[in-house]
Image (cartoon, rainbow, N blue to C red; front, side, top):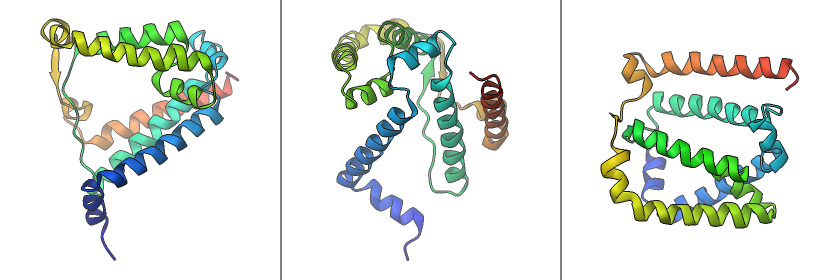
Length: 191
């Protein structure tokens, strides 16, 4: 029987299989978003008004699962992390664009895809078309933005554990416990 690194290496060299797996995972992701209720405008609006914490519960659960899963696979030697360099300028601009679109339409990119999949016309016309137009505008402005805004406050590709000088688990475990505590508190409050 092949060991996991060999299977993963063969997968890395097979773009067709990667696309199929990506499509399958995307369909499952959209299905789970829809079943979790986070593709509904009223649920997202409730989160923005701090009245319905369904979106936070789904996202925090995904962060906990993904964070532990990625770092477990990394500890076992099956994956390696390749963080991208970032800056305060790119984070601020990205956050403003994301927040504006989220507040204006009531969807984020993941939930807009799920909402389009369930047949929401507002998500298709406002969300999907908006994402494509926004991407085109950003691509056109990128050279000027890169020189002026995106490179401000460059913090490189360091991860939080690297900045703190600790093992990844010394950051993963407390973060997971804090998020679990928040989830339990929110659930206990009936939110």
